[in-house]
Amino acid sequence: MIMALIMAGSWLSEFFAAFAEKFAERFSSNKDIGAEISEAIMQVQMYFNVGDYKLLITDAIIVTWVAVIAILIVVGILAGKPRKDLKLTKGQALLVSLTELVITTAMSFGMNRKQAEEVTPMIMTFGLVITACNSISYLHLPPPAKNIAFAIGCALAAIIYVIVMTFKFVGAKGFWITLTTPIPIMIPFKLLDYVVKPLSLSLRLFGNVFAAFIFMEFLSISVPLILPGVAGLWFDIIDGIIQAVVFSYLTMSYIGENVETVNEYNEHPEEHEKKKKTKKSKAVAA
Image (tube, rainbow, N blue to C red; front, side, top):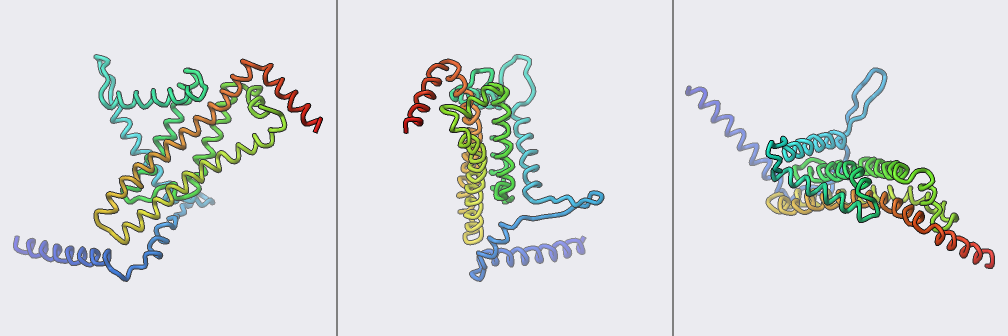
């Protein structure tokens, strides 16, 4: 018993000595802030041999899966089990309200109720996953979006989804109408738009998250107590949610823009033909 107490006392003394040393390092004036931030920015890379191939795993991949699993657990807890009395729990009511908000927003972009309900699951997936990936930095895990590959991957997935849903809602002819409205000469610019849109989505997501990450790293190094936790509520959580909402909102707007263009053309085809003839005649006269 006495020996156990002595060993425990020795372990505690070593622990507090190490803790005091680390605590003093956090407030040391000799810290190289630039070097520490540079180290935080660097991607952690690991290679796994799969037969004759090397599989690259980065911290962005690992943290993304951690965030996805976390958001699945949270949604599962909120959804819960259906009740026999058909009354919604607070969590279920929250999910229903969020779903209805997305549907209403999609309809405001020109989609009908059926189309809005069809895009809602994917739009909410974008929003929830990006929210989880951005907000996880509050737990001092590197946000995946500080890796430009994550942002580009999300943007490419979004623009491919926009094209697929446009074809599904309006068909090949409708997609051609979106490219040739208001005049066929706009086709190169409309095609270029499908390059600019994902570029804009990815740079916006990457730039905001990367800047917030750098700022929070600076605060954590220079002022390690209290302030980083308070500032993190905005830069890690609120700003992370805002970026997810903007990403999802713009993805919806791109689909709605195409659908609305085709709907307007189908309702008043004569007006579009008249505009085309007028602009063509002006171009010939010039």
